[in-house]
Length: 196
Length: 278
Image (tube, rainbow over all chains, first blue to last red):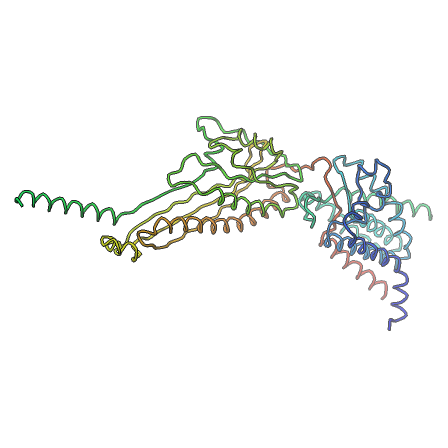
């Protein structure tokens, strides 16, 4: 039988686990369903605006999905423990379309985009600010450092070009990570000013 | 029979036997090959193209072709063997994520000693970015051992294995950027087969050795190609390859989290939650 502490924790993170479950379920959907949800420039022009939100939920293989969802849940659990559960939903609802539009506007060559990692970067950026706010500067600096190292490595090594996805001809977009981080930081600063 | 006729017949017999012996106890050699250098740069007096940094627009469209040979003394390998070789090389490239399309360039599209212009012409027709040129060089030596003396009896050439055959094959696949003609990387494959055969089965044995050696050299090439592809991608990641990477218009992208970041985040979460509890 689960301890009351564990039950309480699961209760606090139920929304997060539900989101992760939805993502995993989506990965099992037929490819035409995933195709209808992918962020596609041409389809967006024809009024399929839901893709601005759903594009981040589509993944190009199990390893792509597992790493993205794993980091999303890890950062989300920590934010829940810090009492910032609503930030996760704000990330998914408000930052997702902004990130989608940003990717399409800044990179005119991209035709389609999928994957949660941009939003994961936004979530981690919010987390680092939240840790600072809750008087945990060491952890805040370490989280920021991990994120900065990832972004720096992508810029320096050109990993973007040859990141291997299970589906051929899909390429990593470091722009999504950079933009996600900037949006996350801006959102965290906005929330801080609002609460002040 | 007059004495001079007997002497003449004796001399004729000695001469015939000497020639026969030399004929039996000899060696033969055949060579068949196709050369990438002879195909791309047939005119040695012309200066080589100025080296430029190729721009690779991902995902790439790649063509695989067998280099046509300008000259052959031992007969060329069959069209079926060529197709098998390039299909196997194409299969290796098909699994690469940065390639969107791969096809084999029909042999009729490439002329012997056609040069870079011929390759670029085929590339434009098939809308290709890269060409994987496959070439080979095969030497076959045939020697005879002491058992070859039994061939004088005619029956011996059906029974005793008096012939020693040696087949050496070298194959290579070289990857070129079609618009600039820049060389990107290559992979070799090699094999050597030794066998013995009876006098009447030598040609058949050599044909069999030729096919087997070519197939085994291709196995070697495929395994080396794997390593060269990994090394080439690594060079690009580290910025050591003299190529420029761009994305093609309308490409599909995905956000991907790498293992290092995921593990460091896990460590920080565990540390953070543990600290919070204590």
